Structure formats: C-alpha cells, structure tokens
Amino acid sequence: MTGEAWTERRTTAVLVLADGTVIEGFGVGAEGAVEGEVCFNTALTGYQEILTDPSYARQIVTFTFPHVGNVGANPDDHEDLTPANSFGAVGAIFRADVTAPSNYRSAGHLDAWLKTRGVVGLSGVDTRALTAWIRDNGMPNAVIAHSEAGEFDLEALKARARAWPGLVGLDLAREVAVGQSAVWKETPWIWDAGYAEMAEPRYRIVAIDYGTKRNILRLMCGHGAEVIVMPPTASAEEILAHRPDGVFLSNGPGDPAATGEYAVPTIRKLIEADVPLFGICLGHQLLALALGAKTEKMHQGHHGANHPVKDYTTNKVEIVSMNHGFAVAADSLPAGVEETHRSLFDGTNCGLRLAGKPVFSVQHHPEASPGPQDSHYLFQRFFDLIEESRSKKAA
Image (tube, rainbow, N blue to C red):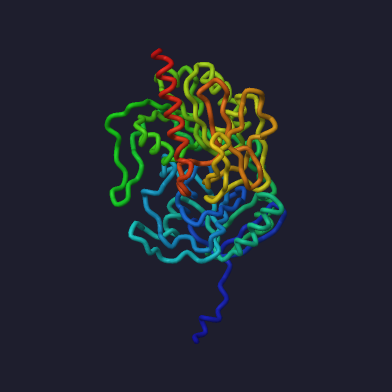
C-alpha cells in the first residue's frame, strides 16, 4: 500500500446553511459561490434533465441516489429552452465522486458539463443525512462554494446565506422564460433515432412560458400540435390573436403569488374566452390563483420521480415526477372548482378542473422527463377537450 492511500483529501467545497451549519466536501463543476434554497430529489435517473429544469432556478439540488454522473452528459437531454443561458439549478450535491462516463449516449464528463453551465457542485457529502435534516427542518437557504485552493471565508459565507431572502415573494418566471414568441415543432425522442420535426400540424397551441420544459412541448407536438411559445407577460389579446385551439400554462420557478400579479389577470381573460386551458406545476398554481384559491410554501417540497398521486376522476393511482416547493391550498378551492388529483404522500392538492369550462391543471409533471410515463394520458385529455370545443363551435 502506498502512502497516497493514507493521504487525507483537502476540502475544496462547502455548503453553508443560513443557521451557520457548514458541510464540507470536494468541489465539482464550476468554481465560485452562489446562494440558493437547498432541496432534495429522490429520482434514481435523469440528473441532467433535473439540473436543466428551469423550475429549479435559485435552488441547490441534493441527490439522494449516491452515484450521479456515471452516464455523462449529452446535448439531447437538456430541458431548458435556451441552454446557453443555463436556466436551472445553481448548485448540486452528490454523495460519491463523479466518475468517468460509461454510456453510448455520453458526449462528455458531468464535471465538464457542470462547468459549462456554471453549476457549483459538492461531492463527498452524506446526502441521506442532509435529506433527513431537510425533512425535519425544511428547505434551508444556503451558499454553496467551490475553490480548488480550498480557501473559504466562512464568516462571510454565513452572512451571505443569512442575508439571502429566499424564494417567498420572488418572481423568477421573467428571468428564465423566452423574451419573444417562437414556434416549437420538435417531436418526442425516439430510441436510436433522436428527435424529429412535425410537418403537418392539426392543432395550434399557445404555450405561456413561465419556465417550460422541452419535453412538454415535444409531447404537444407528438399529438399533432404546432406550439407557439410566448413570454409570461404576454397579454390575453396577444395570445388570442394567434387563434389557438388551446392554451398551455407552463411550469416554472419562484413564488406563484409573485408571478400571479401579472399572470392572473391574463389567465382570467383566457378563461372568459372559453379557450381550452391546461396547466402544469407553476401553471397549475397560477390557474388556482386565477380561480380564487390560495398557494402556500411547502415544508420540504416534492422533488423526485416516485411520487404516488391519485386521479379522482378515474380512481386510479399513478407514479409521477414532481418538482415544486409551493402548493395550492386544497381547502381554499372555491365552489365550482373540483380537486381532481391528490398526493398520497402528504395529501396535498395535485390537480383541479373548472366546472362547465374546458379548464384543468395538475401539480406534477406528466411529461416524465425524468420519471415514469403514467401521466402521459393528461396530454390526451387536453386534446380531447380541444376536440370537444371544436365540435361545440361547429354546432
């Protein structure tokens, strides 16, 4: 045995919580320091889709699965619409060191990929213990820092973590969304073939981008829709000018109450216009606010690909992908708004529909990127509403 086997590794990264707790480890990805809310994700696969989900903006993701990075990274698995802007998680925490990739789809090492996106990483952490801490104490504000020199001003980092106000009251949709309208035609990924482009659309969908994921738009195209992606501040008049068959309210980051200040009036006008509406995640929360319900900050949030949800319209249970730190208060749903889905983990609201209108939404992520595909039927439900709406107009 050589002497190197007994050499103690030097700390090159730290996580500093707002309460002053310091967790040491080894740096991965970009150097520097950044503030964020620490959450945990229980998915076993799909770390690249997770880290590029705009809903994780200003968050530091703790992966409970110990081996992350073994399959490398590739350009096909990005979920943010503009990868060059790196909208997604600002930090990542791993149990084991990131090893060299071993997968036929890999285009590079995860460490190099994190560097290109500016994501600060920390490995060598007991992520199960950190997860248990978050479960008991809630998602903390923190600073994650990486320095190859191993030099940290811990008191300054503690002050930074304490000073960061957190996600409550923060509108992030305008930061991560598209700045101007664009047309999306890319269809879902097919094994060994990749993505294709839809040639002859049967529907026109306007997607209001609060931080949407690519695979949601791909599944829309897979149902024959041309998708016009519009900024979150687009007016109802601008949206309806496209004569859409339906409107999609996308997922996204931040506090729904803050985004709702400008989004809710638009959504109410769309409801009045009788256009079919479908919301996911933040879009679900904004729709609830527009209907008169309330949202609230969650203790530990829902982040993972193994969450059981019951659909009360079919009495079936599905395993779904989740990513949210705010929720719709189920007891605040007004008359005429039906709860359609509920989490079987903690009983929180996961879906609603408006009586007499082609309007519904879900809290979870039916696009399954990453995650199980149990909820793909929700896209068909949306297009069934569109067909019903077309028939009524024709009559």
